[in-house]
Figure (cartoon, rainbow, N blue to C red):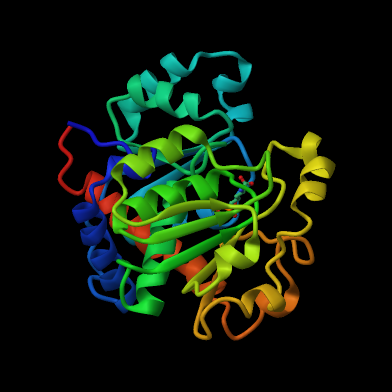
Length: 305
Ligand code: CP
Ligand code: NVA
């Protein structure tokens, strides 16, 4: 039976533990010359721009011995009106897995339910699970544990925030989101996470309260891809939610700062924080490569379709 990775709920906490251990092995150089996915072909269907997700998948796929095939929907028949249903069924006959970056999360669900190959969410308007797995690895690497970690997310309750809430819930991290009214995380995500969580999930208005005694301070852009029309309104609402040195001083002294990138410096985060000694954003970006290799090996390693 094929396995998809559309949200964090598609993996159990035990499976996430296994993936993180494997990613740490990959990072250490273990199995650098092994090619567990030799002969396989993995599609990358990207409807939105990407630097990290695209390049880390392409490099990781190559390192595992497989080939990556990048597709822009505008350049395949999907862009001329061929249905998702037909595209999913046809691509399943050629490819061994597909990574999709799209607007509506429903597109991913429709694609996955019509394909016989694993579908990986490379970002939708609602979720960014590959990012969250890389973030977990970074926290584990820097803090030595996940359970009981206090994570403060400051800013827009977007796709990245939603996946972080799910990741926190799976791994017993206490998460506090500070956001203004109208920028809350998705309600369904919150409801399920609260039902499953062992740790705390708080939605606060005061960024200082959320950052108080945090081990990890995380932020993301105020205007996500596809939200350009609401840009001015969102920037106005979020102007008091900047991660700067004053806010960071509320967190623990050894707190780390994460940002999925790309950053809008001077908006959600200041230069001195993102370039400062507590920032782990470059390790965080690198860890996308190692965790996605572990994910691909997990989903495809023993896959006989
Ligand atoms: N963090 C992240 O997913 O970056 P890209 O948009 O560059 O892929
Ligand atoms: N929230 C951002 C994340 C980019 C990686 C966006 O969706 O544009």
